[in-house]
Image (cartoon, rainbow, N blue to C red):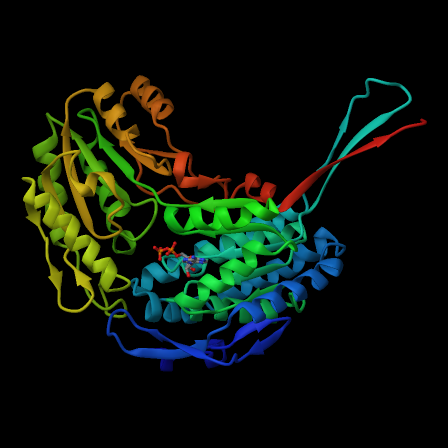
Length: 484
Ligand code: ADP
């Protein structure tokens, strides 16, 4: 699939340190999850190269931090336009290594680019404060300054957007970054970095350290343990987030963590049912169910339960599964065999405990899984408690508003949640009662660059996107002027 790139020079397979493409002493293979075929081999770096990248970034900081915000914004806007201009090629690379349908990959490129545009604009608005004095001989000022070298460890499910969502605010604030992309999807990261070079982002300001899954652990240890790295942003599993947090404790690093979710999707009996089914389809089956904000467990109120599961099953059955490059495909492969095994396990557990399979339920040859709807699901089943990260919609029956709020909140996670209702009182009550960082009301799609994305409880720390997304990349400094 990569032979068809309009601009073949976007296909980079070496890491990027200090503006130089680095081959490394070892390589690792990247595969197409749809076919299992090897796409490329990529530089497999380790601790030494990571330390070098950090040192390089530190040197670059001295100039980048003093470049005016307006000048940084101009470079970021150039990068933004380059992503748009090369959307087809970036999407092609993404579909090849990640599997999502081409149209969806192109959608991600647009979403990824929008963070660069947004933070380029925000760069110019990192305002300070003057605080009314309590002593006529003094004046109080507050300025915001770039925090320093930032590290980003990113996942494979949004191979470009999870990079730009972290890198754009860092760069806008005046911080250089060292990025460790997911081992499954380094090609998307490197193509994006190549465009950053073309946009004129100075050497050392944006570094990409690629590594396989074993060496990612070594890379992570250097990034977390470094005193020079002042901030770590991570998107991935709660389990790995906990490890990284521990590794960052000795250097008291600032952390932004976007971790796992267990999103409830609630349909009340006063909902517009067609709209709820539509929203559930978008929230559940996007990226084959492999997003941290995907509906993980669905709750339908008893009066509309049967109608809801029937219509959902009908729609799920109509999804076309296949290679993301084929026309009309709605759902690509899952990322790897472990992902398939987890989905199979969740379905088997549910069926073993009495759930009914309304559609799907089985693996299709290769890494594909049928879009699945399970009825008569209960809270005891694994699929209600753990993130399935696959195309399975387990639907649970509920009676009252209080009952469903308690069920929805009964989890250590708190990222996204959704509910459908037409009752304005209920919309406020439920919206305020859900212990989540984000609540979609009468919609299954909530993420854009302009809003704060993030979770509460064990789903993470900090917010990405919106003007809040800049906060983690600046330090607040208080200047006290005396002798006035
Ligand atoms: P997922 O389950 O989505 O693959 P992970 O949390 O395992 O999520 O991985 C997300 C990112 O974290 C990837 O870039 C991966 O290489 C990296 N990663 C996983 N384990 C570690 C670790 N122990 N140290 C540093 N990075 C890690």
